[in-house]
Amino acid sequence: MHKETARLLELDREHSLVMHIGAILGWDQETYMPPKAIEERSSQLALLEGLAHQKAVNPEIGELLAALEAKSDLSEDEKAYVRVVRRDYDRETKLPEAFVTEYAKEASLSQAAWADAKKNNDFAAFKPHLSRMVELNKKRAHYLNPNAKPYDVLLDLFEPGSTQESVAAVFAKMKSYLIEILTRIRERPQIEDKCSGLRVDKHTQERISQYFMKVLGYERDRGRLDVSAHPFTTTLGADDVRITTRYVEDYFPSSLFSTIHESGHALYEMGIDPNPDYRGTKLAEAVSMAVHESQSRLWENIVGRSPAFWERHFPALSALLGEVGEGLDLESFVKSINRVSPSLIRTEADEVTYGLHVIARFELESALFDGSLNVEEVPEAWRAKYRELLGIEAPDDRQGCLQDVHWSMGAFGYFPSYALGNLYGAQFWAALKKEIPDVEARISGGDTSAVLAWLRKNVHVQGSRYTPGELVKKVTGQALDPVWFEKYLREKYSKIYGF
Image 1: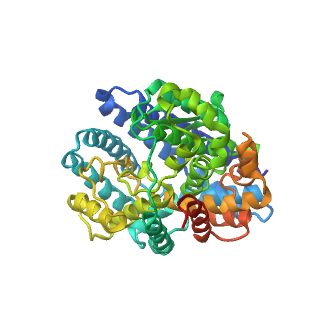
Image 2: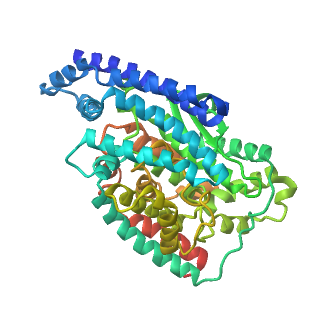
Image 3: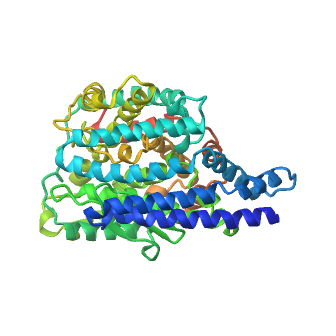
């Protein structure tokens, strides 16, 4: 390792420490912080963001990068590390510190306002904050690349290399086959949801979550489970990866699959280890949010909703449910959790309609940033988009445009990652099944370790060593292709619905 690399690693780790301290405050805000503490918390986060920005734009980083880029004998890890740090450094140096601190404070206040607005079904109260976050993101995009479309710049923050045009092209293919599969399912006899209405108390749901965290291999000495309005995973350090869930007393699968989903995210974070020398640095971070989502969606849906998985674990679930679950058998449960029916809430959506929820948000975000949609028009535009794509309409904004936390925190461009994650997940799964043909038999026997081991070896351990495009090609032998998710859906749901 070159001495310049060693010094760059020192500076990088200092920045990561500050970011992780900020993540602790953000986690606390979403879980345990008293509501009245929001003003000072926003100032605390703004201060930390300013400190992190100072470390990120340290001129010494630029000098070290230039020195390393001039060398011809870098190791493969050094080359990857320089690429990742250069991308972040160039981005950070374009953002004024005053803007960074202002953005952090406004985002913290916006998230608190959103939580109240959602609870009270009051879009008007959130509207000025949403307007402010759109304005700040347009400003951020201009700082980063004044010659590009603002939404292209924002998309690239979450999925490097993506643009509005490239995402729209992929989503056009997805939309076509999702709507066609949904139409076929609607023509078949519908499945009754045997889980809806079963009242399961929060303590029982927590025990269920704990059981499945253990089944998946979530390391409890490296994380913890808490409750938040919107389930999330946060990394506070290499050995501190926390998840949250939410408990809906009359629909326990909500917490069950939220926990499995977030555990998938956490397993990825816990498995990143490209090289011990790079622990705690940018090379030991997820390559993109879509790849991150591929891990949570793979565990939640491909594994977690499969008949094979429940052949082994339904008896344990029944025991945990006790009397409440006495009328629930394995077959009806598996059918219930794979039931396809257009619904209002993205996080509760089935695998077929989920992508349509994401496409709706992508199209709305695109309109917000190209100027064809104003913030005050969002509620009605949301209702119109759901009528168009899903044939349903939200009775209120709580179940409509206020349901997600992302816009309140300024995460415009994030939503496409969810649907792209389904594509990555299905393609990874096809490669896994080719290498481990009996994987479903192993799962039905109670062994999910083969799945985790394969993901660790092929996806997790790499961190950011490769770009998303390079990673998927290395793991599967080809570029990302929506056809794998289509094949997965058709095979699964033709069996369930008989079409």
